[in-house]
Amino acid sequence: MTALVSDTNNTNLITRRGIFIGATASLVCSPAIVRITSLMPVRRLPFPFGRQFAGFVERLYLHALEKHFQASLLEGRTSFELGGHTIPIDTGRQRVAYARALGFLPPYICIYRDN
Image (cartoon, rainbow, N blue to C red; front, side, top):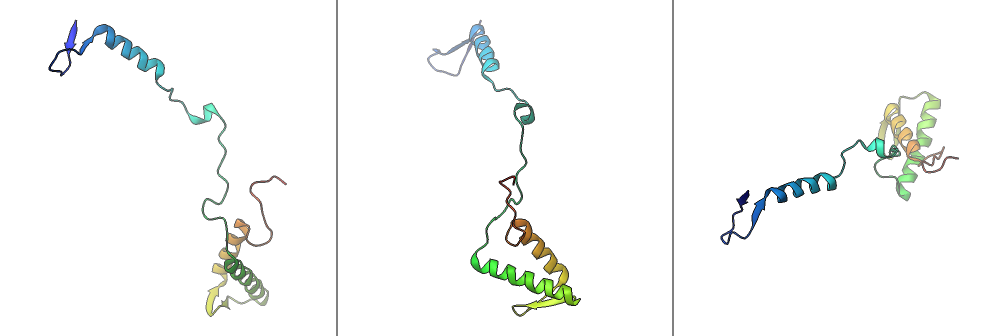
């Protein structure tokens, strides 16, 4: 049994044997669909995902921010002034914690070594 393929010369015919060989080849050559964790262990991505560097001026700002933040905490103030801007203690705490987590302020951390 043959089926015609859209060709004006009728030279391309599809046979049952051709369909069977094509189906068998597609089953043998198709990739297996499995969960990635069953193939190999998957490591979590290290924190942080974004930018992991700070320039010279950014580091100066972060060190000044930490200094003023710690001084205002010791004095019991609710805000402090840095560079002409008034920064609330909560915002300062978040920025200092973020800078420490990225390794810009002490204690410096390294996410690539175990020691």
